[in-house]
Length: 234
Ligand SMILES: [Zn+2]
Ligand SMILES: [Zn+2]
Image (cartoon, rainbow, N blue to C red; front, side, top):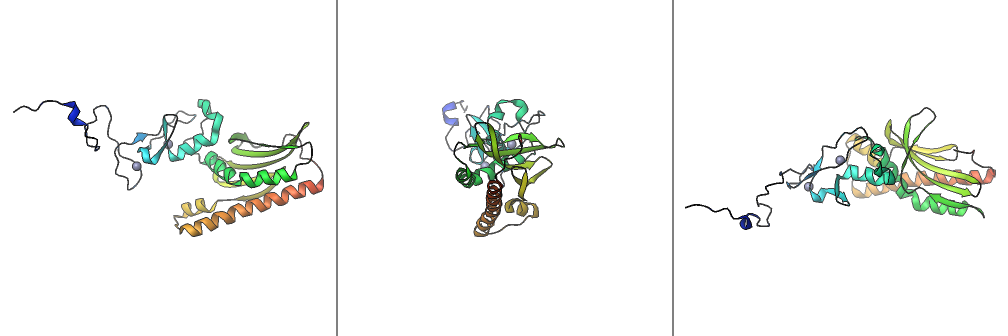
């Protein structure tokens, strides 16, 4: 007896159908057994391609392009820069997404703080994504800022930044003053291979953000008490 080729029977909808044009690729997430993973589309400015492949449940798509979670964070962080092929940070650079993450969590409180500190004729401007900047020694860093401005220019700038050469250390500057820095607790734990209960994780995060917020707040108050302005361009 001859078995006929009947395409309609091949795809039974249970995931075992023969997929002729799609190579079965296992998901890289430990414990996930799916084999419909897709390669992450991320390619950095040096032309290097991410080799991670994750299934649809463990990857993130933006307008039809699929990324691993890590690089989805990078693409989200750089915003408009993602339109420029030379704008993509190095494959292993965690700084842009870390800055974006911290800035997002501090955003409400810094907006409130600067809104209260702004005087009549001044307004608050907020960066929507991270941008690449260089310190005086030409070291690259990723940063996001909140500014008080008036019609003649900048009054005060609050910046969160992470440099490329130490992509775990978060720095906060208010005007020309470095007011706080620290490695976020979840990154410190990952480095040490530590795991903690969810409740401890939450309280460590809260303490970290409280530390940053208090230092930013007192620096802004000090700045206003002095009554002077930040030097131009800082
Ligand atoms: Zn998966
Ligand atoms: Zn990736």
